[in-house]
Length: 314
Image 1 (cartoon, one colour):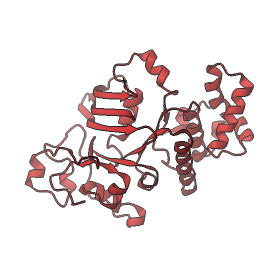
Image 2: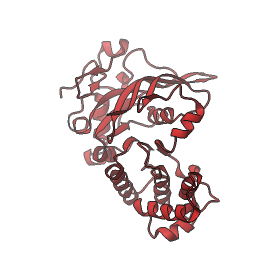
Image 3: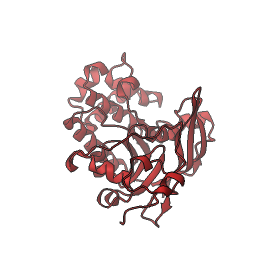
Image 4: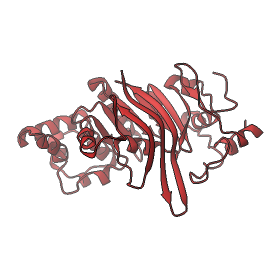
C-alpha cells in the first residue's frame, strides 16, 4: 500500500538576490514499511523535501506539486489537521537535536509530556518514557531520564530525539541526518536503533543523509539528489552495485571503503540553474548536448530511473 506519494514537488525561496530553487520537480513514492533514502551532497535539497512533507518550511517558501500521505493531500490540509498528523502519524528526527530539546526539562519528561498531553497519568507517562529510552539504547534509563539534555553526549541527544519521534508509533518517520557529527560507535548504535524501529513497528522511514554507509545498510530504495532534483532512483542494491548516473558513481567512489576519491568541482548555485545538465561541468562523460539540453528522468519500469543523456549500462 502506498503511504507517501510526492509528485512534481517544487520549493522556491524568493530572496533579494534572486530565487533559490531548492527542490525541482521531485517525484517518488513509499510503501508501508519501506525505507527510502534521500542522498547527495550538502545543499542538494534533501532536508527541504522532508520539511515540506511535515510543513515546517519558512513562511516565505513557495511550494507547488502534490504530497499525499495515506491518500490525504498535505499541501492543502488545514493547519489544525496538519498539527494533528504531526507527531502522531508523521514524526521527525531533527538534524539538530540540541536545538529541538528543552534545556530546562528532564530527559524523561521530554518524552513523557507527549503521553501526558494525550491524557496519560504522569507516573505512567514517566514509565513509558523510560521504556522508550531502553528501546533506543539509553541505559540506565531511570538515571538518564532524571538528567537534562546538556548532560548527554551528541549521540545520546540524537537517540533521545529518536525516542520522541517513535513515542506514538508514527506510520512515517522522517530522519534528517541522524548520524551527522557522530563518532563511529554512535553511528552504529543509531543505525541499529533505526533498523529495529522498522522491524518492531513496521513504520516507513524516509532517511535524509549524506552517510552512504548508513543508506546502503538500511534502505530499500535510494533517490540521489543533485542541485534540487533527483538524478537517479532505484533499489538500494542496484544503486550501490550498478549505478548509472556519473554523479552517483562519483558519490560511491568517495565512500571510505572505496578509497575516499573526492569529487571535482562544485554544485551549481540554486539561484542560477544551468540550461543543460546540472552535473555537466563536473562530469567526464559530458557532451555538447549535456550543456544545452536538460535531461529528463527516464523511468525504467519498476527499477527506478536515471536523469542522464549518457547513462552507464546497468
